[in-house]
Amino acid sequence: MKGVVVVVLAMLAIVGFMVQPNEAITCEEVDRLLAPCLSYLKTGGTPLPDCCIGLTALQAKVSTRSDRQTACNCAKKAAIEYQVREDTAKALPDKCGITISVPISSTVDCSTVFNGMRVTNEVGTELL
Image (tube, rainbow, N blue to C red; front, top):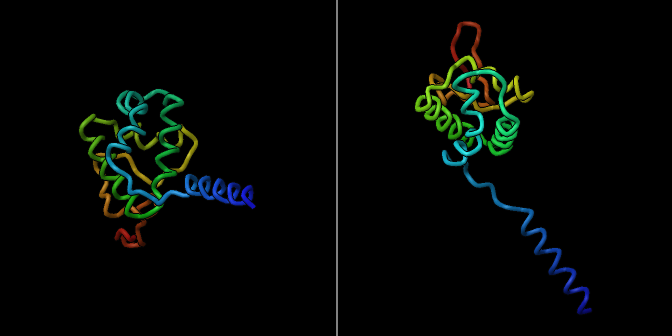
């Protein structure tokens, strides 16, 4: 019986470490994940493997619309601060071979970010 209790407690401890509540993403986290991309975003060329790893990790962390909008605003702020080239930023997901729902742009309206795309109807009005 004592062995069963120990096994059950050990399993509960493992599950407790595996299941963590979703925490809202922060600008510090976005900056950390995108930092390896800075050279590429400013000059072009080929993104470093760590850049693509960070971009993939960012995508995994933005599971809610609120997270996507927060991350978008953080990326927008960084794009302005570091004078990121719009063309390289737009090409980054393709260069890394992934789809990301957080645009990296100094001109994006982050309030329109739903699933990473701004959807426009037939008369040009943006929809969410």
